[in-house]
Length: 214
Ligand SMILES: N[C@@H](CCC(=O)N[C@@H](CS)C(=O)NCC(=O)O)C(=O)O
Image (tube, rainbow, N blue to C red; front, side, top):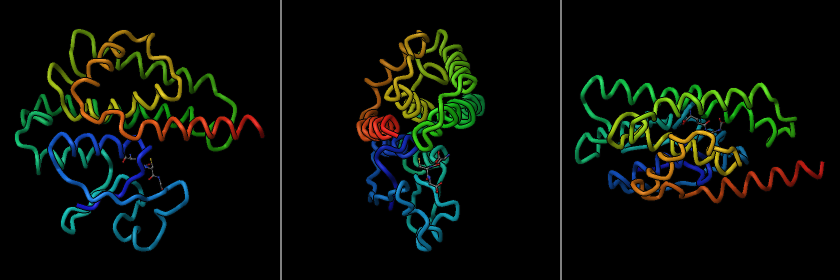
């Protein structure tokens, strides 16, 4: 299975974690989106949306990290525990996955990327949106071990990739006790949860240094 990725990319990290959990071997193909390598005609043919992560399984091409996570478990999981077939359990997992994409990581991208990439000033209104997203996540985790209930699911993999990215950007998660408790616990049950995180940390530090001298 060909896997187009960049180690620091949060959605790519989530896929790597799930592949490890289900025991799938990936043929990793580095694609540096920061250098525009995703725009070659060869890659656009594979993924017209030219995003990473992209997985190609025996000619079947799929992108959007959360769709890939679900595919890996359904196609290769030894059981359905990471994405249970029960409609209500599954619905809750889907809700968390959509929350991650549409609210949580979206708030990160909205606040931090203009600063890292365009040296834009920090926007307090966008910071408040990140805080609101964390308050929601903290509420979801009230009295629950994992983000979609008492068992580990793909939603934890997706959200740990996101939350760890906030942490390396120095967003203070200690204000959210349930999130902090979950973040510590989930690191013990997701092998490779921090793979690629140092690369993200270095990229952020590099951008901040560059911007400070502008
Ligand atoms: N929602 C997508 C986000 C994918 C995404 O935006 N990836 C970035 C890198 S982290 C990318 O490929 N950017 C290059 C582009 O859009 O051309 C997912 O979870 O897979």
